[in-house]
Image (cartoon, rainbow, N blue to C red; front, side):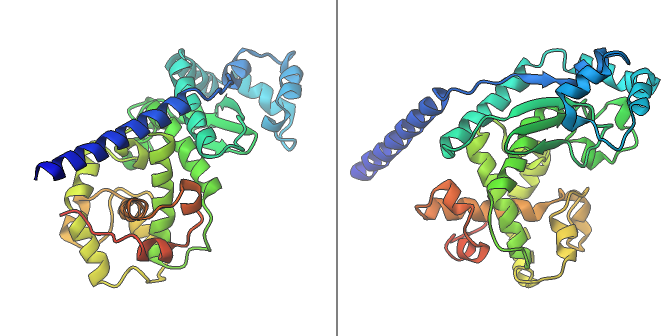
Length: 318
């Protein structure tokens, strides 16, 4: 028994030492950028200076919209109110910049070809369906979609959507969009395909934003996450017993993958469950796969779902 205890202690020591080395290497990565506050620039501009702003940020001004519309927005009371709410909520942008910098350092660690993009904050007319946009060279963040779930401008938005309209979710949403850029697999056909696809994204977030909580990564409350963990075995049994894994019914996506107030098992306890429970299960499958296989993060993102599932040795927690 003593030899076993010493062996386990040695493994833990080596593991912790390796993790410390990785953290130190990531910390030393040089990432330089400033969040370009286009939202403030537009708020402070005038009809006379509009052309100058359009010249600096042509990609933020649709050619199909005449200047008269932009000028009208400058003086519109609702638009001014929204811009001022963003200005007040994000008066100190440094904490957000630090989190995004941390994300970029982790991306650079796993992908040496990663180039730091421009990061631009905008007002998006509370477009909560597209809160952030990511390209190879530009990141856009709609700050007006992160004013806090209790904000007066969000009164007519569903609760399950509002709960993630918090500034703490910005870097998590960015990490999700980057995950989608790195993930490759054949077009999802089955429910298992969908679960593993989103499981890959969540595992990717484990690696590139380890400083965020698991609840923040998946967009759950802590209560939601505990429910998922405590009921993991029953969720899995439901999926298996109803032969859902290889089912191609598109309704399964709306029942268990898409954002929703709760998941739809067709049981009395549905209202107690968080939405998107299929993503959570996919996450656990990918975690199991990575624990039982010597595969790099980027290589895993290219594996097909059946390969990941068949080699995961996944067993739900009891």
